[in-house]
Image (cartoon, rainbow, N blue to C red; front, side):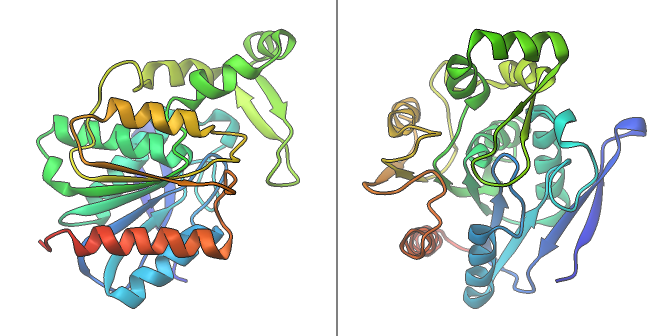
Length: 261
């Protein structure tokens, strides 16, 4: 794989964002948006990339700053910075309508990106979204309420707390900066728009993002076409063979119903 670098930001805030693009150019293209502490070569991301190549669809995937092969310290990352990178990569490295495929935190970033693109008159770039256990507003809605008071105090006084990582050997830093910035990017406080069809895949045994959270999100997307598929025995990752088969079939169905540019 030929990893390329896109520079994002100015001055001291400039960072190199690593990305991969497939060789196919078919429209609508796919943009993979990873989850918190995940990367562009994860099981699901790689499966979607292989699917895109086989289908002749353009595909972009990248690592947020502090993730994978990109510059930066994960503990310094924020939703605002990762959104800036998402918009920069979509703008510079894709053309025409795109289906945003967002996993966990990537679902939050997909909806934030949709809002930003629409605000600048580019809602036509959004062919749709496929969201896997979308962790929209997770910093305030899912993470902070579950933390013991002692942990909250540690985050606010020391600036960071090292959370045990259920998906890898290294602890997951939760920073004060992330929590405060997340509060500036909340979406589930009012009705919102995706500016295209949305299909949500949600495990009912997800301990990180309960399926009630996905149901609440659907209710807020009342002005757009939304499908929610609940996987009764699915966990947060939805990375089993049958889960990935469902994901790819969902993407294929959305592409089939979207007129090429």
